[in-house]
Amino acid sequence: MRGDTQAPARSFNEKVDEMILQENFISKLVSKNLRMDGRRLDQIREIVIDPKPIEKAEGSALVQLGKTQVIAGVKLDIGAPFSDKPDEGVLMTGAEFSPISSPDFEPGPPRENSIELARVVDRGIRESSTLDMSKLCIEPGEKVWMLFVDINILDNFGNLIDAAALAAATALNRAVFPKYEDGAVIHTEKSKKKVPVKYKPVACTFSKIGDYLLLDANREEEDAASARLTITTRDDGNVVAMQKGGSETLSIADIGSALDLAVLKGKEIRKLIS
Amino acid sequence: MKRNDGRKPEDLRPLEITAGVLQNATGSAMVRMGRTIAVAGVFGPREMFPRRLQEFGRACLKCRYLMAPFSTDERARPGPSRRSKEISMVVRNALEPAIFLEDYPKAAIDVYIDIIQADSGTRTAGINAASVALADAGVPMRGLVAAVAVGKINGKYVVDLAGKEEDESDCDLPVAYLPRDGKISLLQFDGSLPKKDVKELVKLATKACEEIHKLQQEALMKRWMK
Image (tube, rainbow over all chains, first blue to last red; front, side, top):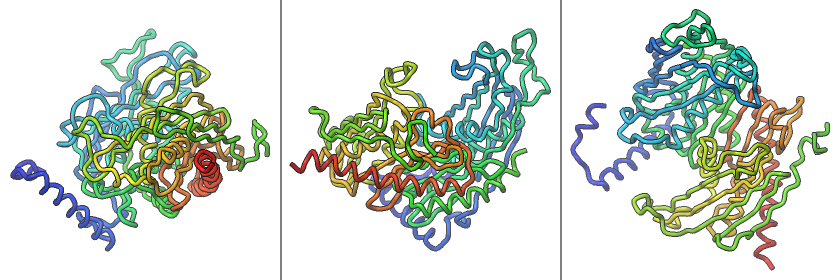
């Protein structure tokens, strides 16, 4: 929001007052089943996916979730397998919270938030068996495909995990191998062979405000929330990853209703992955 | 059904909790869950440094979970990893709701968890130890936090995954639970299962946590009620 940066300087106390007012406002709204942007509690923001923004990447996707913008790129290279899985390819997921995405992010080594985001997205892909890792093997114990999924946060207006997971799933779904000749990768050319993808994992993140769970929180709602729960499901409805965040608790009933909704909404969102 | 180590599906591993195992720390505890051994030391509440990170109305809870290089079959690389950083964070989130942090403005409470032997369930063993160590340090708490990982092997729900069971199980589902409030403060899931199973497993985990909670209380009684 351009207006934000132009606002006159305020004292620390004024900022704190404003934050408390905003939190109270949000939790009052939520207790009446309302949200500041007019959504229902279980309604996600509009999703727009650009499925191939980066020509040089083997797969890529730019996801807009409301005003949140996240880009994921897939690159492939040849490397050595892990010694305990000599006949499987390697998947590596990283995330960069670029300082352009929010006034709160500063450049530097990955902080716990970006590590968590990358690991939650990684588990969604890995645990769902989305990738057939054995098909990424070239020579057992020697040479395998290494698949790098890198996530770049461009604009943070909340719920980065879901946007990142969606970008990663879309990028993977369309990813192709680079050209591979005489045991070497030709990075400048792509082949027509698609990366073997079986599923489309979708993450749904819930935020707890007061006694209510709401889906796809924006940044202000995230600030007002006490706890967070991400549930990733795949095409057959199975749960493949969960991660609770935030410093407060959840009840067993919260988890039950979040699971029900995550399966339902996951189906809806999955249709957008092409 | 018998498990590799002869346990029944709902059995915990032999669980041993000792409070007050370190002399330098304000509070400490050692937890053995089968072959997994976690040592937790709590320092503080004490002044928070650097000062600019002090919080006005509450203490800052800092957690550091680390695995010793000799704790695993293959030597683990010493120092923090991405995995250990994430676990440090979820452990902090798991413990925070139990502590009256608002009683100590501007202070820091440091919780250090060393995994000296790893055989599955290290984060849950770490939480069990840290929670007892916090109480041992005299930090005011709403209650203890108990934690356990559950899974599903050969169609059976199993409690407290050990060693290779983590690979055999359809999922790894660690839960931390506050038995006094009936609330869940850590929940993670790796694997693939229908939601019905996930719901059952969460309930099963909370039951097992209640058992662990009793042993935590006993350990504290043994140390302090002489």
